[in-house]
Length: 44
Image (cartoon, rainbow, N blue to C red):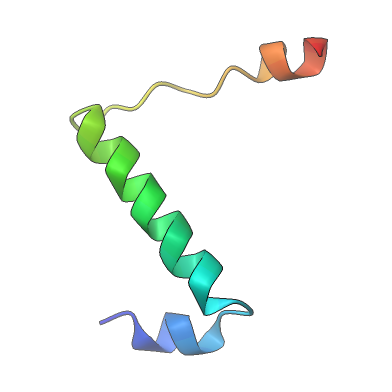
C-alpha cells in the first residue's frame, strides 16, 4: 500500500524508520502523544 511513497522517497530506509517511530509513539500514548516542548529546545 505504501509502495509509491517508498519509490518516491529520497531515502526509503529513513521513510520506513520515521513511519515506524511515529506509529510506535502513537501506540504508546494510546493515540494522544504529547506535543513537543519547543521552548525547552530554544533554551539550550
